[in-house]
Image (tube, rainbow, N blue to C red; front, side, top):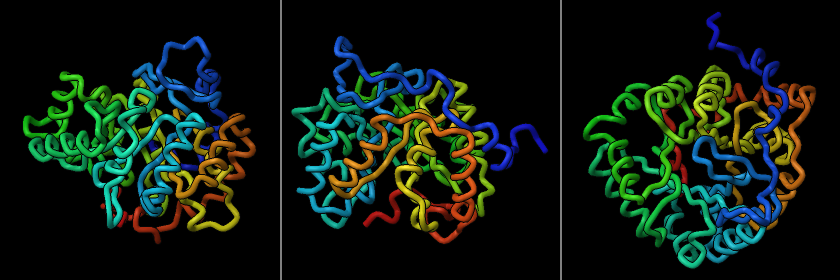
Length: 326
């Protein structure tokens, strides 16, 4: 067995609790940061130096499943409770509006209080440029804190990111102009492609599914996560509550804590469709402490059927995040 080709069973033995110093204390009252976590635990987003809550507000399918008024209430409540990192994408939408448009309804007056991330799906330079410009217009802002290349699928496209007519030079140009502050990428389906993206380019962040593709054969947590963390990238986990769709008896509380306790993970993106769910998620992280090695092993066993499942659309090879948001 190759050194990096660890099994999930081997991995869990090396995971356990987050190492000392990863989860940092809440922002102090004397901090010069414009962001206010309201006492929620925070951590550094890798080499960006930006301090973020350990839970990020995901504004995709669940958020867009509710009416605009409820969505805006979720946003306002999140900020008031200390969740100031909001994550969306240019293609997230329902039948009536884009997620970016909904956020843009209230963003302008509170812009400096929000760490905002969105995503570009296009790989061609001209198309990517139009998407960034559209994002700015929808969001009613003149800058994006983190712009991410959306849903990395394979190594071939990763190698083309830096081409003259590729997506990365466009993002870099916007970064030079101050329109984009940090650049990252996201993915669900290929551990090798995610690791390659971290190897080839100087990204600030990686947003990665706690992934269960191809009957559990994709070693996401074993390969790209530690590599990216070793490069001081912010490593963000998504799809952390989705196991409840397949396995009965799993609690959102345990699943969020499991993701946050994985070695190398900086923070978790969690979607919500109600203020009640939002408040429960916030309660989960208020006094978060990494799970013990024993509890991590117990949850890993409970999650095994999910890791081997191939029933959900987003778990299929070739899935592109946002394609099932309608």
